[in-house]
Length: 282
Image 1 (tube, helix red, strand yellow):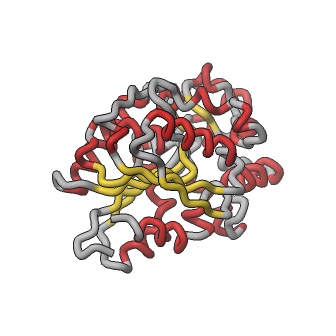
Image 2 (tube, helix red, strand yellow):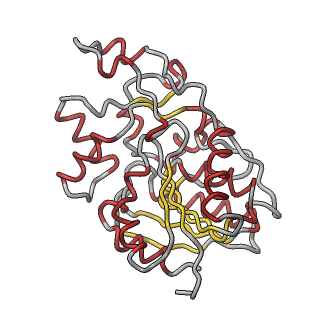
């Protein structure tokens, strides 16, 4: 590791929060490296829960139709917040940023905004959309066939403005599907605890937004993509599509690729391996 390695900022994906990086941060911090996990807009401490989630008696129709309290959140807000978080951690200097899942879309926007503040962009089983293409355009592509997020949604995103899960559902089959979707190789007890921490609503506006990428912006920053071979949320073929599109657009700055034999959430199933990948970056 360099004498003065860059700080590391961790960004979660849809429904998660900064909490999901706790084990990775413990590993990275033990090496003496400065690191921080943050909440995206509409998530974690910034999340807002629909009333129908906690209403008693529980009303499944209300859950399926109630407008989301985060329906007004979009990629512009998410990118601006992340850019400010990067600037604050780095205090004007460069930061390595690791993003998971839909957090990758937000990372792409922030890097395009402040490329001089990002030393390395790391996409961990993340959306890494091409220029002017919204993340949502990839979800139903042939490369993502077999994904389990869509079947887990409890409402029409176009009607409520969010992708809604029901983490508190008592239905054992539904909770089992959530475990398979996000935490297939995670200890069952840890997976159940993680499900309990998920926010019900993920703002659809983040996935609907797109970013124009330039050679001087996003295309100028070093990037690594960490693929997850057993991912049921972003299928491995789609992960490869992201890499291929990026390399075709910016061939002078190819993507470094690392592969983990993991499900969608290696920050919980193999935090040491994730930390080791980060530790090799300046």
